[in-house]
Length: 223
Image (cartoon, rainbow, N blue to C red; front, side, top):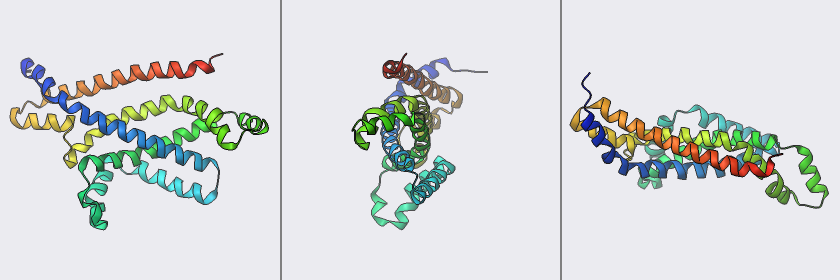
């Protein structure tokens, strides 16, 4: 095996400038996905049959379509139906794609988080004179979100890695940077190994941040 160490080390400074694009797509997408997912979870929590059926279909649809296919539908397909979307950028399409797809996963995670809170706490809050909004804002949601945090973090890690498919619509992110380097060097192993290591180190860094956040947010619930 002829491993080019010098080239391998030279890859890192060439691909790191593309890391902010990957992080931007992942962070913005997970924020939109969290808002949409929590909204869906709260609406489904009311157990209205028609609403529940609609969102069940939404969740099934976006969990079932592969990310690449969904991205192609949004970026290439939708502009044919809605001409106003012809000017949508590739990065925007990627964010829309990941926001919709991961909101479907997060909706179920948040719904499980809401179900993990003792129903008696809601009844006690309403009995004490708090409104339903106040009960959810001050009692139920803080506990539900803490319970959902580990799985939400796992979804962000999956999204971070999944963001590499944005390369297929021309987004200049980490994988695209690696692809451009291999076009001139033909050193595929060294290049993609470096790209993989950057993803891995990013995940390791985020995992450490998540653990600190979990520890801090869980303190009020320690017994």
